[in-house]
Structure formats: structure tokens, C-alpha cells
Image (cartoon, rainbow over all chains, first blue to last red; front, side):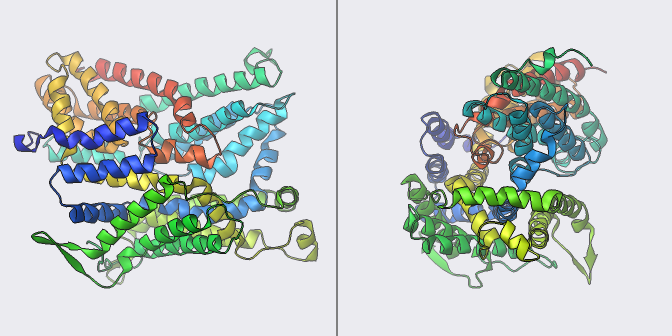
Length: 241
Length: 358
């Protein structure tokens, strides 16, 4: 690909610079992103009304990012009002061998396995907040002899959010080619390179397995921190039964 | 395509679900407007009302244009652009807030515990329905056609499957959580409220506040970058600034550029074509004879490692933290960073070892 040299105008990077500086200086993110988008359009030679038109059109095109959360929140709110989080915590806290880390690893594995087949079962709003995080937290609280500090509970929740991302990202369509594999194939095809989708999918398998090992490592570290704070021996140090 | 639009020749159009979401947002705005104890009543009601209105924008049946210099611009998207500026300013001025804790929080906690005992695992049922309908819908909806029309447009299948699953699961949840007799009502401890789903869901949305539209605004920014050729400029600099003459260095350059670009753009799918056409194909494949399938697979995964550590991927890294009530905005990224680094190293090593193997 050799873009038209006239299109290589480094001023167009002003939006990237604004975003990087804005995030680094911790300015309000919405304002930073809007200013970056507007500045990029102005630098590219659009007049202000055309900038607003471009922003509005793209904002409407991008409603699919907001739509699921808006439609899911009444469902989650209703179930939580009827004790879903309490139920999720009670459901697992009786299991003797359960730990917070093992709950998260099991979720990551389930998420990864289904996404290998192109199934999107999961999500932060629909699984992590109402079910997985309360389960992990319930187990952690039940195993601890002392109440866990808030900072550690925040860390546990951050790991619960991470479990969704680990499971979602690193196993996509190894077996059934949808989504990302087709994006890759499309890019290669337009460049005149013929690549089989099953070849791309198959080379995703090593990382999919390695991501599970990495998840096991991260969640074990979490369990150790929870065990120390909860006043127990680390689960890793338990004698074999 | 712009502003108004003839609905596609399909049985179910995503605009219907956008209208349902818009309705939810308008009800939230109305509930705030009626809540005298709300800490930022006017600003919050305006924000949610305006956001709700934008979900109806593509159903506006009139086309109106404005003269702008030598050419005409479309009125509806310009109005949406103005609405965006308004919403962002309201959030930046801290006029959009969540309601304070409910007055009867202690009673509500007792009620939740009693309801959890009453309903038990029946509470999980609607989430199973949600997952099954969403996953099944993504696979099946695009394949269904009758009466000479497709059921849904292929590029809307994901949105429609998730949206329909949410609506169906909500109806099922209403059924599951219904109070069957006076004893149930008594066990619930606090008086039944009307529209409890939208009220409780609205509180969750209000806790997200402006962060709810951050992913949508970032997607907009990605579109602006795309339409104005920003990616080409970055890819040009990356291709000319990194060492690519030696085969293994070309692999490292490609594997550095993918997450770097992903961190800047917030999206590995946006990075992949630019970096692959800029570095991958010309150098790794054409000049040094590497295997494109191996390069692409590990290269995309290197990009995902960048997704794990960028606040630009707000839907994965910022919104979930707020949903879970974590105070530190960057907690999720901090939890993911060691994983991202180790996974990236693995992918670089794998690509280096495998891509030139014949």
C-alpha cells in the first residue's frame, strides 16, 4: 500500500496527540475525545458545520456500543433487586475446594471455550457484575477469617473484569471462523494474498492455551494475596489430600 | 444513509431496538425529573433525555439540509453533533450525577436477602436465557429469510441478537420474580414499586453516567480518524521509522507496531489492516518470504495485548470497572498489564520461531 504522498500530512495526528496528552493529564475523557475528533476534522479541512455533521453521523453509526448496556441494565437491575448477587455468593461459598481465583479461572475457561466456536456467551454487564464477581467475592469472604480490606476487594473485582477480557480475546474463532478471522482474511484478500481461514484459526490455538496458563498464574497470585489478608495459609501451601 | 434513511428490506431492523433503548433512556430522564431528592436533577434529566432522543434520530422521517459554504449538510446529524457537545459539556461540568443512596437501604438489603432465599436458583434462569438467545441469535438470525426478505441484515445480526435476548430475558425475569401470593409480598419486606426494572436499571445507568457513552464517542473518534486518513499517516511513520530490513527485526517491528497502534486507536481491528499492509505484507511476507497466516494470527493477538492496557478500549477496561464499583479508574488495566506483557512476549517468540519456517 502506498498512500498518496499528499495525504501524508502529519498535522492530522493532532487528534492522537490530544488524546494521549488528555489521558496522561487525566482531563475529563469525554471532553478530550470530543475535542480530538473535532480538531482532526478541522485540520483535515472541514468547516465547523461539516465537522458536526461528521461527528453526528458517526455517533449514530456507533450506537451499537451503547445499546446492549442500556437494554441489559433493566434486566440486571430487576434480578439484583430480587437478590441475584446474594444468591450467586451463596451458591458457591459452600464448595470446599472453591477459591476466588478458581472461580475466575473456570469462568475464563468457559468463556474461551465457547468463543472458540464463535459463541459470545458472557460480558461484563450480563455475567461479571451479577454473577461471577459476587461468586468470587462470596468465596473469598467465606474463606477469610478476618474481613477483607476494600482495596483487596477492588483488586478482586478488577481481576473478575479481566477474566472476561482474557477469555473473550485470546480464543476467538479457532474452530468456527467468524469475526476476527474473517477480518484478517478480508485484509489479505484485498491485498491479493490467498490465505485459508482454517490456517489462521489453527495458529490461534497455541496462544489460546497459553492464555489459560497465564490466567491460572494471575488468579493464583490473587488467591495468595486473599489468603494472606484473610489470615490463612496460602492455598498453594496446603498439604495434598 | 445520513440522518433519515429508508429502513432496509428486512423483517427486523436494528432501528426498532434503538427505539426501545431510546424509550428506556427517556423513562430514566423522566424518573430523574420527578425525583426531588436528586443531587443534579436538571443536568442529569437533560443528559439522559438528549441521549434517549439521539436513539430515535434515524427514524426521523423528514430530510432537511442546511447550506454550509458551497455545499449542503444534513440537518439531523448536525443536530446530533450539537447534542453530543451539549452532553459532553454537561458531564465535564459535573452536572450529571447518580442519585444518592436510597433512604431505605437497610430494608432493601433485608428484602434482597429474603428474595434470594425465596427465589433461589430461579434467579439465574433469565441469565441462561439471555446467553442462549444471544448466542443462538448471532448464529441463526442471519440465516433466516422468508417472503423474499432476510429476517435481519447480516451486519446488524449481533446487535439484534443481543438486544432481543435482553428484552426476552427481561420478560422472563418479570415472570420469575413475580409475587404469587400475600406471603411472597410480605417476605419481600418493602412495598412493591411500579416499573421496578427500569427504575433499578436506571440507577445502574446513572452510576455509569458519562462513561456509558465513552465507548460510543471513541468509536466516533475512530471513524473520524478513518475518514480523514489518520491511520495512513501513522502507518507511514511506523513503516519508515522501524527497522524492517532484517527478517527477525521485521517481526519485532510488526509485533511492536500492532499493540502500539492498538493502544492509540483503542481497537486491534483498526490497527490490523494498516500495520499488516504497511509492514507485514511488504516486508515479512514479500521481502523475507514469511507465512501470512502465521503472521496474521500472532499479529492480531499482539494487538489484543495492546487492547488490555489502553483506556481507549473503554468498553473493555473502563466501563467494567465502574460497573463493578471499583474506585480506581485504571484498576482493570493494572490487573491486566502483567498478563498482557507475558502474552505479548509469547506471541512475538512464536511468530519469530514459526513465520519463516518452511
